[in-house]
Amino acid sequence: MKILQDKFEFECVNCGKKFSPAEVMYLCLDCSSQNQPGQPPKGVLKTIYNYHQLKHQNIDFEKLVENRFAHLLPVKSINSFPNLRVGQTPLYHISGFKNQQFPFELFLKDDSQNPTYSFKDRASALVSAFAKENKINTIVAASTGNAGSSLAGICASQGQRAIIVVPASAPTAKLTQIVMYGAKLVPVKGTYDDAFDLSLEATRQFGWYNRNTAFNPLTIEGKKTVSFEIFEQLSQRVPDRIFVPVGDGVIISGVYKGFEDLLNLGIIDKVPEIVAVQTEKSDNLVRNINNQNFEVVKSSTIADSISVDIPRNYWMARDYLLKYNGKWLTVSDKKIIAASKILSQNTGLFAEPAASAAFAGFLDFHKNNLIDQGSKNVILLTGSGLKDLKSVSSLVKIPEPIEPNVNNLKNLIQ
Image 1 (tube, rainbow, N blue to C red):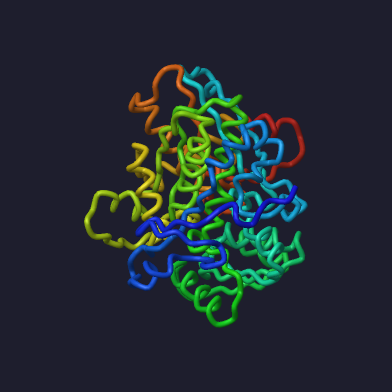
Image 2 (image 1 turned 45 degrees about the horizontal axis):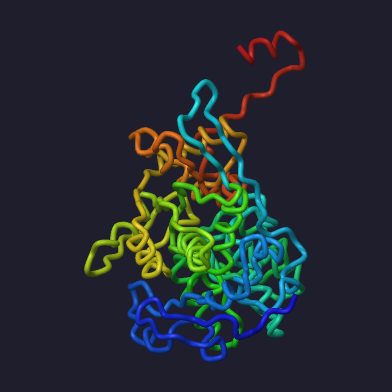
C-alpha cells in the first residue's frame, strides 16, 4: 500500500512552528539555533497527521491494524520496513506472584522479543525504512548500547551501513552485538552525551543520516507503535496505568504520542495514567519537571540504558506528563536489582536494569497501595537481561561442581 508523502508535517514542541518534511529533517530551525551546552535541546519536532482527513476516510482501529498502523507512520509504504518481526511483542497477563493474588490486573509488555532484544528496534526500523525510501545508505547513532545494537541489526537486515558511537563503558554484550552485526563501532573516552555530540558533528561533516533519539523525530514515531499494540492486545481497551523506564524521555513520549494519535482520531476518549520511572542516580528529567531552570546532576547508575545527564527529549516528555497528569518517581539501584530478581523468579522474564526499573516502580506503587482494585496496569519491559549480566552478578552464585553421584546431589539441593 502506497502512502502519500505529504500526509504529515512536523511541529516544534517549543515554539509551535510547523514544517513540511521537505523543509526540515531533524530540529526546529529557529529553536535549535538557540540551544546551549549542558541544557536539554529545544526544537524537537512532533509528527502531526491530518486526523480530520483520516476520520473522513473512516480510518478506524481495525483499518489501522490491517495495515500495521501505516496510516499513522511517516513512510510511503510498510514494505520499506525490514524483513524482521519488529514489534507485535507479547503482552503477558500476570495474576500474581506465587501465593499472592493481585486485586488488580497486571500485564507485562515484553519488548525483549524484538530482533535485537530491545524496544529500540521500533525506532530503528522506522528510521531504516525512511532511509530506504529516500535512498540513504549510511546511518549514524550515538548509544549507550541498545540503540546502537538495534540500529546495527536492523541495518544488517536492510543492507545499510551503520556507524555506532558509544561510551567505552557500554556493556560488553551490547558492544558484541554491534560488532557481530557488521556495524562500525566507535568507542569514545567519555559519556553518552559526548558520543551524542560527536555523532552530530559527523552528521554535519559527512552527511550521514542520524538516528539519534529525539534529534530524529522518527524515533518517537517508531516507539509509539507499542501503544497501538497494547490497545490492540487489550481488546481495544485503554489500560489504567503504564509504567515506563525513562532516560532521554523518548520512550515515554512515544507511548504518549501513540495514545494521543488514537485520541485525535476519536478511537479512544482518554489517555492512560503513565508513570515515569527514573533511577535515583539518573533523575535529570523528573527532578527538573517543576524547576524554572534545568540543573544537571551527573548520572551514575547500573541501569545504563537510562543513564542520561541531559535528557534529549526533556521538553516533549515534560509537556506530556503535565498535560495528561502523568506520575513520576525514582527508584534506587538496590531496588532495581531486587526487582530484577522478583521479576525473574515469579514470571520467567529476565529483564535488563532499565526495564527492571519500571518493574521496581510498579512494586513501589503496589507497596504503597496506589493501584486501584480491578484496574489494568502495564509494565514496559524494554530489554533482555542477557544484555548486561554484570549488573546482576551480585545475585548470582554458581555452585562449585560436584562428583556425579546422588549423595553429592542430595547435599547440594538441601
